[in-house]
Image (cartoon, rainbow, N blue to C red; front, side, top):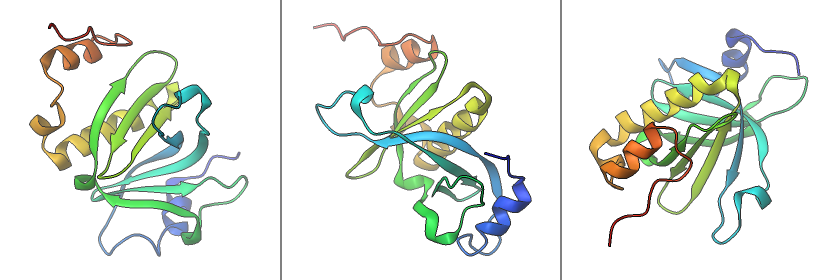
Length: 156
C-alpha cells in the first residue's frame, strides 16, 4: 500500500473530525475484538488505519490504494471511554489491550509503529486518569514494564 501523508489522511477524514480537532498520530495497526475463551491466535485480526487526535481515537477500515472515507469509520470514541487492560512490549509486536464498558479490543503495532502504540497508551491513561488504569497492582505494572510476557501470579 502506498504511504499516505498526514494531509491526505486528514483531508479524507475531514467530515469525521470535529472543528478544531487535530491529528497527533496515525498509522496502520492490527486489531481484533477479543472473545472469551478464544485464544488470540485464533481471533480474526485485520489491518486498520488508526488516527489519534487530541480528543479521540478513530479507527478506519484499511482500503488498499485509497485514502479512508467517512463511511470506512469503525470506531470513534473519546479517550475517557477506554481503559488500558494490559500492554505487552515483547518483540516483534507491541500489543495493547483496551477495554470499554462491554468489549475488549487488542491493537498490535509493528516495530515501525511502536511509537503510535505508546502514544495510544499515554493518551488513554491520561484520559482515564493514570492511577485508575493500573488497578492490577504494582507487581503487574512492574512485570509489564520489564517486558515480561506474563507477570508472576499473585501470592496466596
